[in-house]
Length: 454
Image (cartoon, rainbow, N blue to C red; front, side, top):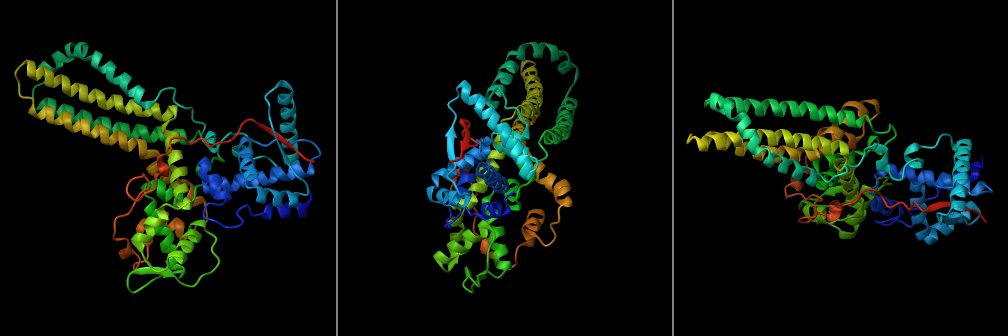
């Protein structure tokens, strides 16, 4: 291995000159990638380009590596400087999808794998065997939209009203009030307890489907904080508070904030905060927060985490679970509704059971809405708290402490500055609209076959 060449490639910085929407952030932003996955993917791209340099024959990238390559070609100055380090111009050769190309790129892919193993060891499956990071979750997409499935169930229940009425009529006639009310309330309690147990069990089983090297097992504290709170303001609060703790930001007597002494900053979030604060000068924190929310470094946290939630909620596993929960609640509502119909036909009081059915209807809406957020806001964060983090050395890591303990670790002098309303990333008010994007699979070009040297 040419260690000198690899060292130069490894140390090459794609984000020069620095900007708030540089190469790395744009790559993550456009493809809904997390911070850690983006960093890993760029490293794999550098390894691929090393192979393309030392090989006299064509090598072929994975779709994820090809995504990075496509973007790097757009950054013409950076790509030219990179090729100067490589010592030759690496050409991007697209596939024409004919039979000759298919065989040529198949051989190139096999050659790439062997070369990679010789120089770098085993290829990471999440980069080299998947078209995008979400494939590592091994979740089949639901064949039907959730709305369609729910409409089908509702229509089915409407059709069953008449046969169910005559089937349950003897039961309704034999059970008087208030015994029926107690039976109905008991059924609700048992159903909710049973659903809670079953849902958690299914979520746990689903997590076991994920590849061990999946990106969801390497999320950053601020990404998890957004997942848990669904509020980008809580992420920014933590980042600003950390800078206050480190003495890089000071709180002035008039309750404004400004930069203090500056040292080397590694975090992209911290750098964005300091850059904007230097630009604005002394400013009240609520006004500062409003401007920070729109910055790509924070909006990308929203995009990538909302993509995780949407991808999971569109899976067959979640769709089946959601429909099952809906059917259970709809059965309870139908049971109460038929009791109301029986009471009306027999001229009996129906006030209590009507009230109970209305309550169950609202409970169903709230419970199902909670279910759509349960994986991202509860199950995944709890996985980190109970299984992943205990295996990591997170001592003296303020961000992980903030994730685990929340606002309890915030600086006392900083808390009053947050008294004004906070903003989320839902696209309303002062929030960014980036979380409303509907797709999440990345934009990798699968038509690329490989590359050739001079």
